[in-house]
Image (tube, rainbow, N blue to C red; front, side, top):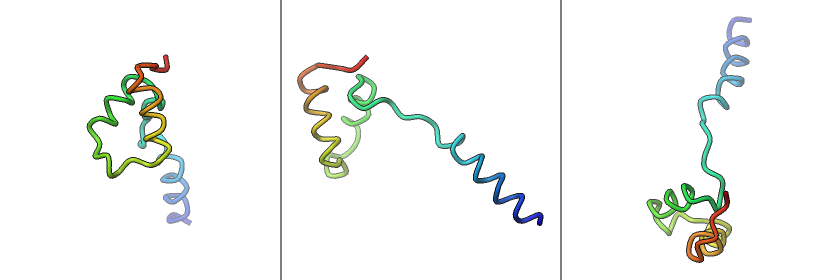
Length: 60
């Protein structure tokens, strides 16, 4: 029973510890992506980066 309570507690605690990332297309997200190796980018991230970061159309 005690193990089950610990598991349930950790399941609820995990999302709180994960933190929030910047919205894709925002200026802070673009800066994060510039620090990340391009080989680690997904195709979707590359498209968003091109649309918003390269062209300067940052999301608010």
